[in-house]
Image (cartoon, rainbow, N blue to C red; front, side):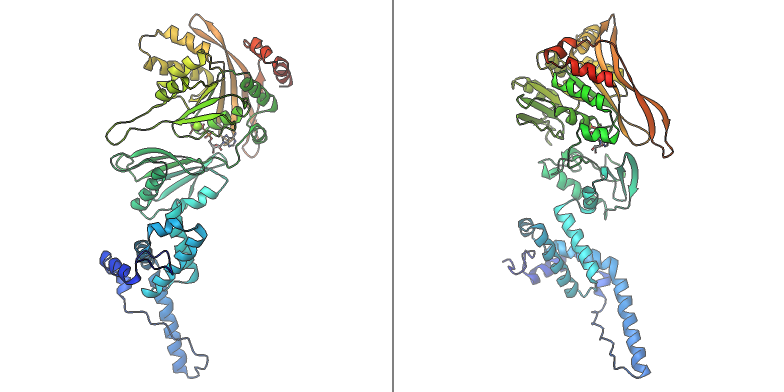
Length: 486
Ligand SMILES: Nc1ncnc2c1ncn2[C@@H]1O[C@H](COP(=O)(O)OP(=O)(O)OP(=O)(O)O)[C@@H](O)[C@H]1O
Ligand SMILES: [Mg+2]
C-alpha cells in the first residue's frame, strides 16, 4: 500500500489527494486557474512587442508568486500533514525526514501549482519537521544556551529569561490548536495527558527541562506553557563562583555542610536558583551513600551512582491513582535511604521530611519558597501545622529547630544576578524564639555604572552548634579556616 519510493507518503498519491480534496474546501488561491509556467523570456526577443510581452509575463509571474505565498503555504502545510504517515515519520532519522519532507513539499507545490522558491520550501519543510519531531517554533529557543526560561502565554506572546532578565521574543504559534498540539505532545512524552477535562500538567522534556502546561478554560488567553531549561553542563560551585553567586569561602562552608551530613534547606523565590544550588551541593555527597529523591517533576541531576528517583503522579481522569510527595517520602523511609532529597517542600510532606531528618536520615536536603531564612522556618512550621493536627505550635517549632541545621537563601536580584544572600545556622530555641545565626549575610553596598550590584558578605564568628559533628567528620579545621578567609 505504501509508496516505497517516498516513505513519507503513507498512502498512494492519488488516494491521498482524493482524501485531501474531500477534507479541504477548495481554497480561492488554489482554485485560481492553473499557473502555466511562464515561458522563459527569450534573449532573442528583438521587437518591442516581444519585450513588452515578456515584461508583462514576468510581472504576472512575480505577482502570482506574491499572491500565492501566505494562504497557499497554509494549504500546503495542511496537505503535507494529511499525506504524511505517522509510522513512516517515526521510523525516519531526523536528517532523512527533512529531505523527504522537502521532497514532499516540492511535489505538492508542483501538483497544486503553488509557486514557492527554494527558501520558502525549505522553511516550510523545517517548520513541519520541527512540528512533527520537536516543539515547533520553540525549537530555536530550546537550542539557545543563553535562554533559562521560556514562557508562552497563548500563541502570540512568548517571553524568555536571558541573563536573569525577562524579554519578549518574536515567536508565534499559528493558533490555539497548534500550541495545544505541542502541549499535548510534551505531556504524552511522559505518559501524561492534558486536555480540556484535565487542563493542568507537569512534565519534562527529553533533556530534563521542567515544563508546566495549563490550558483553556483555566488559562483565559490561550494555552500557557512554562519551560525551565537547565544548562546542558550542570552548574557546580566553580561556575557559581565565576558567576559571582557566592565566594570561595562560602562554597567551602557549603561543601563541608554537605559532606558532614547536615540537614539543609535551600530557600528562595521562584527561579532564584534553589534547585541549581541543591544540585551543586549534592556533588559532595559520598558516592557510597544511598540517596532517594522525591520530586513532582524529576529535575535533579545528582551525580552519585546509588540513587533511586521517585516522582509524584497526579490522579487519573476518574480521580484515582494520585501519589503525592507525602506518600513518596513515607515510602522512601522504608527504602533504607542514607539521605532523602525532596525537590521542594510545598505541603503535607514537610511533616514527613522532619520525621526523616529527626530519625537518622541526616544529610537530607530540600528547597522551599521563602523570602529569607527566618521566613523559611515559619513556612515549614505552617506546612507541618496544616498536615499534623494535634501537635502544639511549640512542639512543631521544637521539631523544626531540631531537624533543620542550615538554611541557604538564594535570590535573583534586581541586576538579574543570582546570589547566595544568607547562610543561616539554626542554633536552637529559647522560649518560643528560634535562635538563628547568620554565618554569611550579603549586604549591598552600591552599584556599578552598568547596573551590577556590588556588595560584601558579613561573617558571623559565633561558635557553631555543630562543632562536634564537624570534629567527628574531621572537618572542623577547614570550616574555621573558611570562615577565617571570609
Ligand atoms: N547562580 C546562577 N547563575 C546563573 N544562572 C543560574 C544560577 N542559578 C540558577 N541559574 C539558572 O536559573 C534558572 C533557575 O534555576 P533553578 O531552577 O535552580 O531555580 P529554582 O529556584 O529552583 O526555581 P523554581 O522556583 O521554579 O523551582 C535555571 O535555568 C538555572 O540554570
Ligand atoms: Mg526548583
